[in-house]
Image (cartoon, rainbow, N blue to C red; front, top):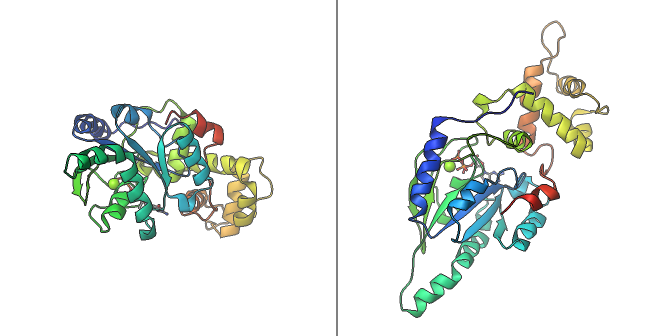
Length: 284
Ligand SMILES: Nc1nc2c(ncn2[C@@H]2O[C@H](COP(=O)(O)OP(=O)(O)OP(=O)(O)O)[C@@H](O)[C@H]2O)c(=O)[nH]1
Ligand SMILES: [Mg+2]
């Protein structure tokens, strides 16, 4: 499989912008994808905020397995965390209180001195985890653009709310992926710009990973019974979904796109690609 490399200019610029703006912020909301909380965690981002309160949002938990368990793991290592579906207005209260909690002491002290403080949070995370959607949820309206691909937010944008000011930022990644397993999981969930991905590679690797962790889902959706070779699994997808070219050849391209899309849209069920050990090993 080809290495996943990621080094577009706007990513480097985004990282620099983040460091510069961190000084203006009282803390951070780090938005993770609940389907791969460890893979979507960038330790470098956390380090920018050392000494300041950080809230981890395990977003897209409607598509994820074990979100609450993973919240507990993060909390047990001393971090603040909440599992969320940011597209659901019913989750607003939980998010708001989680934000209030991480600055409770500071706001209490301000109140004792007779004034109300406004707290500035930077909202950050790898692309497409739902940072802008989280901000819209908190603000109760569509204040910032969202979209189902990596790289929707380009520049920074301050959003003013009651008690908080939030800085929406473009998704950021480490410039090189040292860990290709994590890179692959980010590719599956759509956090890496599809333009730089080899979809055949990604779909075949995804089938192999699903076969290991959730074989029954592949049987259910595609009728796959033999998990020994990714290519024969892909052929099952073609047969089941009728992806055939004229002359009876398999339409592999369509099948690759369909498999990845099925995963992203939750049609393969709720998943967690990271193991419990992965989550415990990440230094949240
Ligand atoms: N199912 C589900 N979809 C979500 C959730 N949160 C966000 N989304 C969707 O995920 C996609 C990405 O959301 P954005 O808010 O644009 O993500 P972002 O992190 O700001 O992305 P960039 O600005 O590109 O880095 C959009 O299609 C959202 O509707 C969630 O909790 N559950
Ligand atoms: Mg955004």
